[in-house]
Image 1 (tube, rainbow, N blue to C red):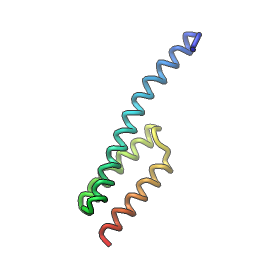
Image 2: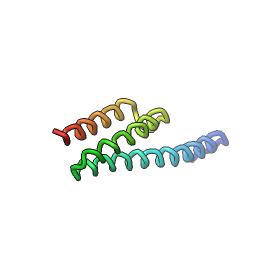
Image 3: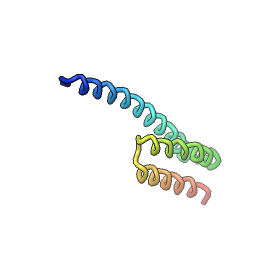
Image 4: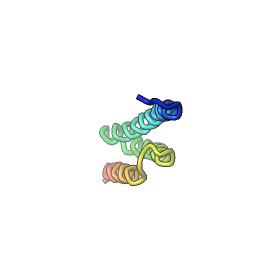
Length: 88
């Protein structure tokens, strides 16, 4: 338990930022889910469109510090590979 006033304030700040980060992470997961559902249904056009919509959201999560740059790069790469495989 925080004793000093500065520690209490830090705890409040962390709680607020955690809520924001949870929201951003949930939003990113939703975009990824849309891409994966389109891939699962075999709809190449929908998968490509949802991937194009998901990429800026993923990059925004990087700039906001929610996800690491390499993690997002890996996710985008794997999704793009799966979307490309639909056309083959």
